[in-house]
Length: 310
Image 1 (cartoon, rainbow, N blue to C red):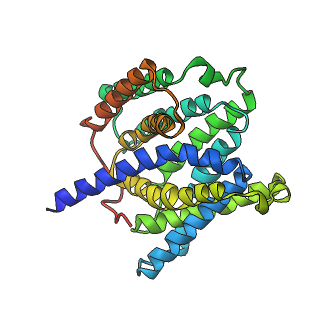
Image 2: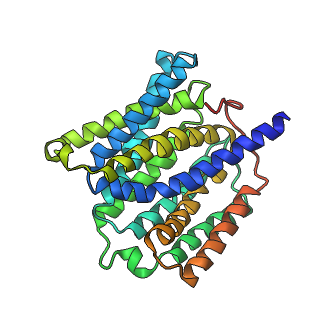
């Protein structure tokens, strides 16, 4: 009975980071059309962080100790300021296809970084095959025009994206070994709150606050931001934080292969974008990659035992 409950939690958590995060590409596009990128991301994560923190504290979750806040700051800086901040800034200069490709390489970063640790998950041929197929699938998913955006790649934007992907992978792995509350929801709230404050600071330093006109935000922008806060952050990032503590980095990182697929299919359903044979082939390859990695017999070695989901 307990085993079945854990399996259900794993299924729901993976579904969250696969499908909800896949849908956030469209929400981010709508949101940054009306709000400056750093400011939008800062509002998103500060709001989500406060919701989670207050919810878990009111639910009598353990009070965070002073020694847990520096770790939350480090993870928040890497994941949100470094990772998400790089994405929202780069999307002003780099084609969405290139962005998806760089994000699709995050699993490679995570597995390679984890393999350098003595206690890390082993780098098996099966996992390497799955990772390679995932990257090939992302390539197949993108047409040349989508990859380059109809022109040359912006070098600064591409470099920032690569660094952002490395920051996200590093922050994800660091979170497995830092001292954190037993509640994944409380830990996620602390990380998002501090990371969001850093993003708001970046917005202020780059002059976004002076250029931002709240009167220009429409209902579509507000609804997009609300979706990103509640589902994209409160629900999905809590699931991601928990999964990083109970599964292997290779398995959790498969979200980076599935998210672009979800975005493409949503574009077809909501925006009437055509599904080509190339897209179908990419879907088959990416699904095969995920199945290979998920079914790998690489040991699952959570560093601190099974944590509470919330």
